[in-house]
Amino acid sequence: MTRTLNVAMIGGGFMGKAHALAYAAMPMFFWPAPAMPVRKVLVDLNQAQAEEGRRRLGFEEASSDWRAVIARPDIDIVDIVTPNDSHAEIAIAAAKAGKHVICEKPLARTVEEARAMLDAVEAAGVTHMVAFNYRRTPAVALARKYIEEGRIGRVLNFRGTYLQDWSADPDAPLSWRFQKSIAGSGTVGDIGTHVVDLARYLVGEIGAVNAMVHNYIPTRPLQSGGVDKLGAAQKQVAGPRGTVDVDDEMLTMMRFKNGAVGSIEATRNAYGRNNYLTFEIHGEKGSIVFNYERRDELQVMFADDPADARGFRTVYTGPNHPYGAGLWPIPALGIGYGETKIIELFDFATAIVNGVQPSPNFRDGFQTELIAEAILASAVTGAWTEIAS
Ligand code: SOE
Image 1 (spheres, protein in one colour):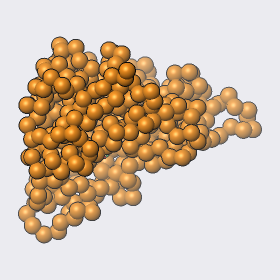
Image 2: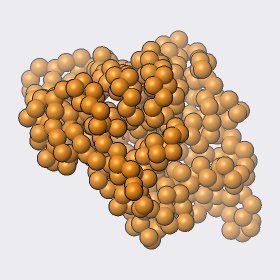
Image 3: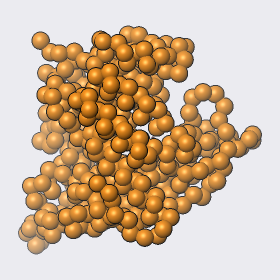
């Protein structure tokens, strides 16, 4: 009989919605499922919020006490979808209680926190994952397959961007994402790390960075109410403002350990860009281009195509591509954010059942944190900064 995995999810906001959807839908897509997730307990800041989340997200129970929930013997997975400042405390407690842990990105605010989290899960021998979900877009996994198969030869260059515009308006509210004490950093941690994760996944380990960061909007309107508000749709012109003490924009050059070079640009202030997470990879035998806003598509150019047919062409992901057996039966029916989370959970549950570590796990999250810290350090000194490992 298929094993069940009882889930305690800590947090019921934007990411909670995405993870709850994945728990419900994973067996609908991937059947037979590696395990049947049971939405057991939803934990939120207070009982009323937890109860509302329970009803909405389909959990059996509600609680405002994550420590008590983690101590329960019937819980198998602790899922951390809270702001960054509580990731370490919850993950370390969950590991000590012997629970498998999935944690939203970035893994932590600092390298020290990430190190402690990695040590805790490794000491406990539990399965761990950091939720850099964009790797799970089938077109991204297809890009990796092509690279592994040598279809574009040795990789020479990776150009990545993550451009959004939800914070371009100076009157968009002071989300926790603008506060260093909660977030750790701004674009670097929030969206830059997604591109770092893709660069490591597709090209290999990053050896050194040379970066700039900028802040353009030093204050933003303070929020009222307990629920974090994101973006200009929540614009508040009047009222008190609070300090933004993180970066609004980052740019970095990179040297990969395998000799490739690359760059990343990330900002949440690029009017007209919504979730413009892109990469262009050039190799000795071809190129690959991806844009998450057109995530069913992978643009490929293979240099060994006949001379009169050379050029970029579009591959629409479907049943013949990574994860295709579980997804929709016809290419281009549409892959969304939800599907990336469903695939992520499928890989996490498979790893738990097989007693192996998935990727990206806390070691990857820790390494990405080292790179984020090097980007911030290089932005201060202006110098090339080696990544410790
Ligand atoms: C805001 O920039 C945000 O919600 C990020 O925090 C997520 O990681 C990204 O997937 C979407 O945008």
